[in-house]
Image (cartoon, rainbow, N blue to C red; front, side, top):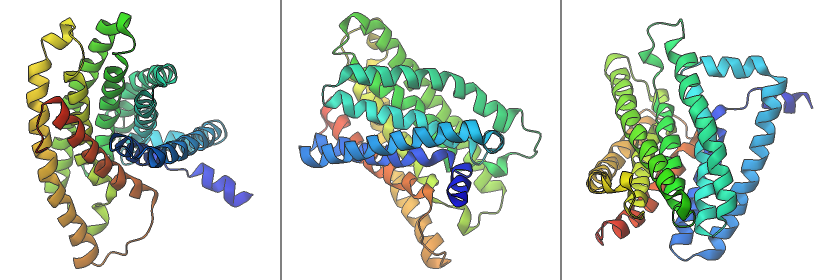
Length: 308
């Protein structure tokens, strides 16, 4: 019992990445017509999500000091954004199977949490943190902030065909979240690049969350492709061509990143012989690969690019 309680106290904020990974593979299977596999993975993801919600609520109530420490730790705090992304990955899967009412509910929850955490986490972990310098704590988990933003755009765009009376509002939300995500990616990329260039980089530092740098681009592509497919609305009309073009650019960049990340993994595990063992952050590797596959499907369809 004591060990179980200790495990809950030390629960990693980014554990919802497991739901993200399972959910996106389910969506990819659904798009490829593998209905049975998609259904099984969806229910696994949903069960995983429910368990994590219960455990995290327990942790917030019973172990507030641990949670507070996580919010102040710039190397861990951005992992809380995985809750938003996981919620919307499930929402996107529900949209794909016609369960739009539940998807709309999940979107509402995620937007509210996003609006709060989007200001709280940068302040508690970085801006309001007395620790200086701060750049040496930047890592791949910072890109989860981008993933959370873009996941909102994906679900908002997916719900638009069903909620015609909210077309303008959903268009504004989708474009707003997509745009914020793009700017956040640029900011996170600068911080992480500076950390890599200015501070020693050891094999243990290049952990799986660095793959989120590619996954964040991939979900930006998915969100862009879904926005391009939305019906005419004032916000869509003025941004459709821009988003369509940038989505192709982002796809090229995401594709370019994959060999870089594979090489980094080889440098970490084969050259420096760092043991390959399971850690919770391993889920951060699965999600980007699944999202990249889904991004190619959506982008090729939206922009009529069979090669993608």
